[in-house]
Length: 280
Image (cartoon, rainbow, N blue to C red; front, side, top):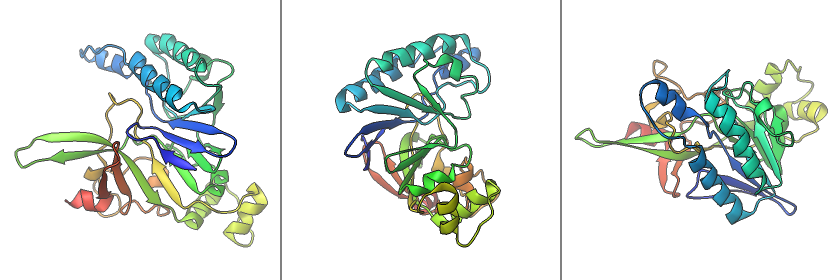
């Protein structure tokens, strides 16, 4: 079972044997980039750690999975990241037995900073119970299509509200939308250069030993609430090609019904579909 841990940007995957806590995009070290621009903000790592530790104590999961972008720098690592990231994970290990990290596009050279018993998973994702998780900057593995629910990060979804006087307010949101599983499976097989033998379902069964079950996709808000994001209601991904699309190949594909995606604030307030909120 997959459930949102409102009002936090976190989710839980539960079955009879285990409980797995999911978060995405902590981006440790982002404030150091601000400091380079003359904006001096104290390190947010302790704040992120306190919030996450609180969830671990409250929900007592067996495992923690972070859906990528542990650090902010893309290739190299800043001095602050070299100090903060190992300490961050050592303190988490005191609260939860198993920790896994799905590689994000900001996680180059991250592995040497992780304790040896923290699993470093590929960007294409992994399966936890009946949920397939991946970061979102690249296509997921076809093996995830054997799960009913897919969950990704990467986008940092937000909505922006404006009033007639020009006042603007930005809020983090969850995105939930439906999948055309056969269309997505066809694309993933083509990307993997796997020739379809018989039907799409038969090919998945033959090569990955799964039944095609994926029907829904969730996009997680960033766990770092100090971080910015792309206001999704200022995009028109399928209607106006001249505007900037949502990031991530799966969200730009025809397999995902982006226009009908449902938007929820962190407190659970339903805002409407993306197409409705964008046009309002």
